[in-house]
Length: 299
Image (tube, rainbow, N blue to C red):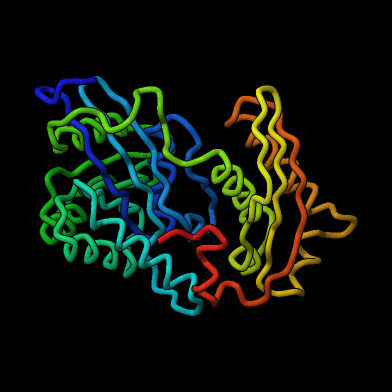
């Protein structure tokens, strides 16, 4: 076990609006696809923990759902609560802002951190999209004056620029204490959970408009053999009329979702995967908070 005399370790919440790049940053730091990433907002629906082991310290990163203004479904309200409540038990918060565009939902994230009273680091992501980096100065002054962060970092989570320097800054402000997890660990999430997320990632990628937001995934059976995983999963849709769309003509859409999900699982788990995927309807689940725990949505 590392001595607490010179070793730093702590929990760090990544907070921001949808599509600010929190999940991409988590994956870049961890070096594994712990969190799913798509171009659609509100892809992240759960707290996802990634563990980053560095010389002299361990960062326990908590990716959170993007704070947003949508209140049309119970699920949207639940995601906002999960994000805000994630700040209650962390050592540090990282406010991730898309430097190429800011808006009202960034304000929600900032206020959540201030209300939680947790120390923070301000991160401007996607600086590779800026035509004129001189714009970072007034942007920094605007947000830092209100947040009063311990440090300000500029990076591109997508290409890795500035990410290592940001990790060093964060680590510097964590408590002096031994590591919380084994140095070989990269997440606390189960393989069962990660499999469901990889399927949901493909739902977000392959389906259009509002349909993927009304879907969720249940892993009904998970057999993790030494050479092959056998996984049975069911995609649930909130409206019966969407079931046929998810399946597609000649089951083409479902086959494509299944094939791409399986390949993602094999890359992550390092073994062959047999995936049995089906579609069912659970009308209105997205508005019934009493069912969220059964469907895998944790508080």
